[in-house]
Length: 90
Image (cartoon, rainbow, N blue to C red; front, top):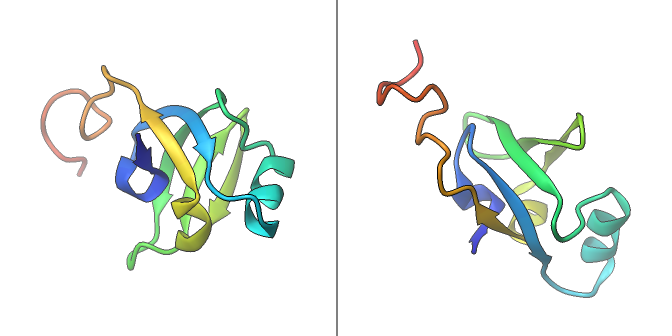
């Protein structure tokens, strides 16, 4: 499993677990970050914070501290750069 910030831009996977039991974990669970839920990283700010993900048809931005609490099972067949041709966007 990887953390959300390790997953990378335009990559997706399933939430394996939400680490911890404190207020941060409870907040993420209440927002719908439940084990088994599919998500995809859609934007990363220039300095890496925040990270925006798409989850159940909506987008949410998470700080790196929040992103680190999510353990993701990456999609095995997702292209590295999101366009499938081996070249960067642009």
